[in-house]
Length: 87
Figure (spheres, rainbow, N blue to C red):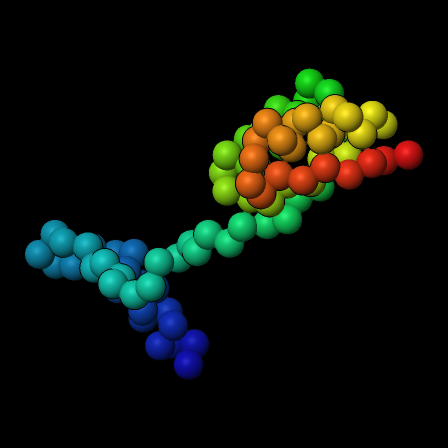
């Protein structure tokens, strides 16, 4: 089994005699799966990082001392954004 794996890796990594490189045609190596992320603190850093994760397609829950700020931020982002309180 180890030799078969080593041969497969070598076939992909080492160019053939004709100067071409073997290419795998299997399934993609990366599959996007949205995560559920909680951000504690809705200040400059928390809101920025949360917005970036939301823009990347993740579900984001914001929690801060002031429930109003969390609700406003979640309402601003729309779907996949939620608000909670941290007290």
